[in-house]
Length: 328
Ligand SMILES: [Zn+2]
Image: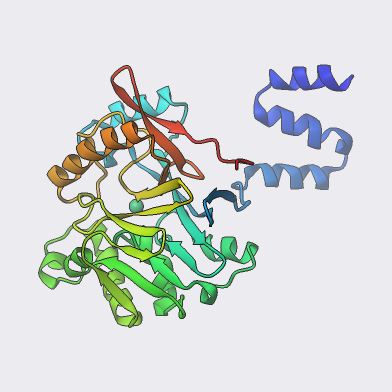
């Protein structure tokens, strides 16, 4: 069959059949090879993805620690069927729920390496890939000069304390003081639901294992061109990170935006958000501002690499994926 028509033909087939015809075609009769192919087809996709952009003198590399599927009833403000319908309309509905990625961002300028967040490290879903992702860049955790933790939920700091150790021994740590205070408060911990207990436990470990922790009060520059943005709401000390140089900028907004439900609405939440009024108030302020600025956004849980923009489309906010590959 000529190449073109074969491709056109394959385009009309379900993906599983394409794999069978291209990979298995020459192997029919070799049952061992066929079994291996079938085994590979069942295994989760395991390649570590990378994405890299330039912001002036900075190179920003998106990495990911993995993913987890969040059940449809984890989104207060909407019923499970409503969330599932929205996911279906975006072609992302899975039997197990809404897929959350766990993206981290490495910011480098040739002098310093700053990592934004450290991943869930196996404490949620299929996570724990960040060390391998760094290794693929030729980096060990001791080559990281600073880690900015956007807030003290387990999926953003688990990698710091995996195994009860300080896993980034050379890193200065930056965390908003309001989150440190909240997540190390025994009264808050005893009153919190079971699903937040891991975050409370990890927060204590982070404070104990990282003597170079710097509590941040308000918006400030960490180094020239890298500054903290106050995005309180998701947690009391939830922060973003603005990277800015040479007339370009990007803002890492962490958990301001969840897949499927945001930014179309602000009266829908994720289970982990304890102060929903505060979470709503921040999104009410942030989404229109981001849309009017056309700000390039990096978001932890959006599909990899989590780079996009909030755009206003006939009065409705929607997520516009950013074109990142092979750009200036
Ligand atoms: Zn998160």
